[in-house]
Length: 160
Image (cartoon, rainbow, N blue to C red; front, side, top):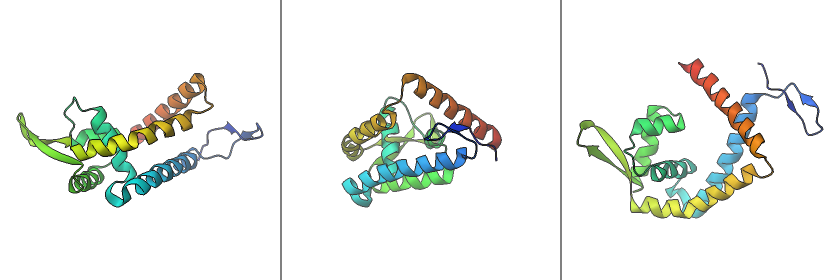
């Protein structure tokens, strides 16, 4: 497996680091942070993924959002999205409503309960984002996001 050459803590090039392993490690650390807070605050009524989903729905409240938009936003399969949305419906976080122009489509609408939960967690998400960016320059962030975009593109091309 080809690896991205990065400098280790001593400033030496580390040729053996795995991009996939590093991304997985960061993902696990983020998941642990978010799930820990969500679990502490809401028990098993809400998961970290539900929190991210609520943010997506509320941030796009002026648009019709459908399951396919949710799948695309989070790069998840239809079956995974369906399970997440069903649990969110069961926990009274969202409803799915028919749209007049296509009986097959159901738009996702967040509930007042979802707004309450969102308001309780958004501060934590802002704080987490601030911590993640701490000590990074604008140039470093631009480089980071550029590299992530290339990695995502590589993976999307591979799965096409």
